[in-house]
Image (cartoon, rainbow, N blue to C red; front, side, top):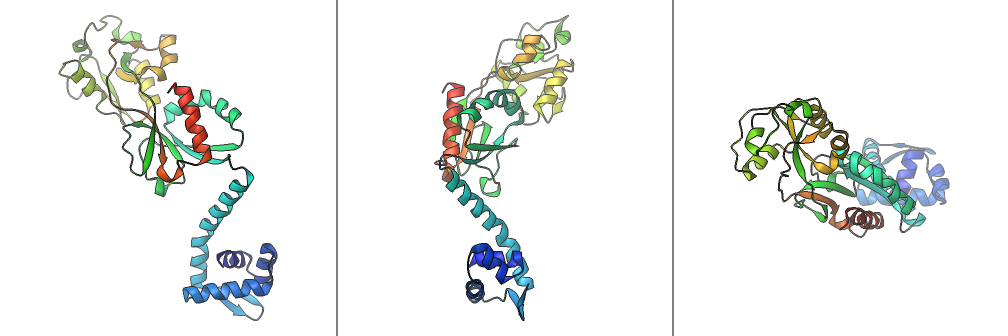
Length: 284
């Protein structure tokens, strides 16, 4: 009934809807009438041989149109390849750019039947309100309605431009309190935790806060201050000498990188393939 109504509403004709669905005009008319009886709502004005949506019919058509389109697409994907389909993946921007993308051609080569769409997300979200199948998340695996797959830890260390510490390189954690401290908005307690782990009382109100990893990295390279950054994400800058470790004392944290998957998607073939590949890449 819903398919008959949606086709008639879109085509503006029972006859055209019948041709599209390979049914008779009478069958379309009867299904629409049955739907109207079920809803107790008039969906079409019938004037001679033409039809016109009522106001209630217009609203109903808009509301079910997207849902039926999703059902059609899902059905097509299922029929095309039971092991393939669409994978909508949320990623952390810097992790995606610096770690995931250089490796991802290998995943696509191994899984040509899977089409992957990416979107950037910096914090947890409600999978029920997003058209996303999974997310790569940094933090704790405490995401409501989702199952976690541990990928890896990170080692974050204090770094700066060589010029910032050329005259007075820090010898102990206390020395870093004299420097301007740069912080990432999504990890505002990083410096506080680092100083606490090394029994140092930090100076209050020093340095700037940045929204994006790329910005805080560039600020550190420019000599604006010291930052705590994951070693594996700044490998290129360390190799070039644009950044130098201030002290080889990483911050200890219970947080890590996880693949988060809604519970009802755990058996979805593209997610199974992605999970297996990610675990291979991270050596888990």
